[in-house]
Image (cartoon, rainbow, N blue to C red; front, side, top):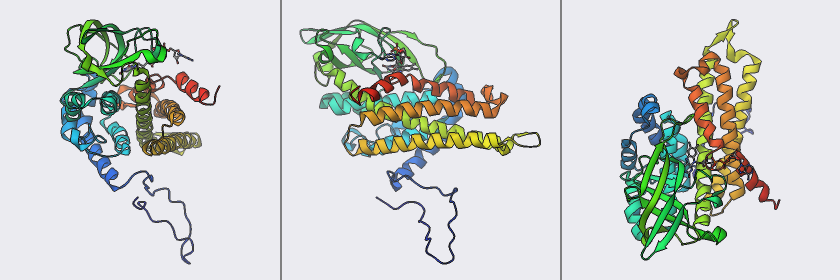
Length: 405
Ligand SMILES: Cc1cc2nc3c(=O)[nH]c(=O)nc-3n(C[C@H](O)[C@H](O)[C@H](O)COP(=O)(O)OP(=O)(O)OC[C@H]3O[C@@H](n4cnc5c(N)ncnc54)[C@H](O)[C@@H]3O)c2cc1C
């Protein structure tokens, strides 16, 4: 591991006095020089090529060329092996993407990309056959095929075991009937990683994942859903009516889909937590600049003690969440399966991101309520994180149960 960016103070030197080094920029020990370079290139790309469209994409949703462009730049396969067109990087590269994409100023775009890179494609990489990797993972990394992930149904969200979408074997095929809702990228995707029940009597051993092309007869996009925030992403209600797929469309093991998707959710939650920390940091910095400019009662509002303390509270929350994310990522990177800590990081980061965005609206005063300043959008976008990928209550339940309760 390379050395930190700044050298430690030599307290023993006769002319040195220990002073707080608030302005020093230090890299966390999980990152190395190549992560910094990646960080720089993703940030530059997001600021130059994405952020200028952020407002327009709130109306139209972000355009499909973003996938193609990010594929060309290698950003859609950072930790996938080079043999599939990936960059062969480590898990921390995915964290860097989740952190730097916030500079696109578009929560919806960040979510649509994260669904593709960290939710729908990881199960193909881990569980897929070589043929499936060639047909789906390779074009997904190039940005030529867009993916989505179908778990949630109108009657089953938190309780994944309650899904009703059925896949019934018929010769060399399966016939799938059912529906999925709130599916990100659902109106634009070329394929879906679909969670179904193949044996309703087998409990957790009765689930199977499928890889399905969205142009398969019987695949229906029922509706594009309107929502509170994340307007730059598309969210769909899908239906499957006698949709026939070959047996080769099974992803992973027949009957083990529940375990496969629980594994997938861990990566999804950790990446979501990283995005929350980065989003909170960005709105914090924006608000800091605002508070130093804005005056009331003859002084910048940042000079009121109450405002100073608000920033201190927010900074402490952000830092605590960041440390949880990095430490948990380090464990994940080193081969552990830290479900409890991932749940804690997801819960804490989602909560503090919403709290920070809310406080930033408050510090902005009326401006915080105006769309022009973009702070209210951060709050609306961030609010999803306490619901999506497992609600706060579900995270608390996972954590509580991990103690045998
Ligand atoms: C914008 C958006 C994008 C999404 N994208 C996707 C996607 O791409 N793919 C996908 O599959 N899903 C997606 N989702 C779905 C998301 O993961 C679910 O909304 C979430 O898991 C909650 O499920 P639910 O909405 O059915 O709520 P419910 O499960 O009905 O929960 C309702 C309330 O009951 C509480 N509750 C439920 N069970 C318990 C319990 N055991 N103990 C205590 N409280 C409980 C919940 O915490 C919640 O407060 C998305 C959702 C949104 C809003």
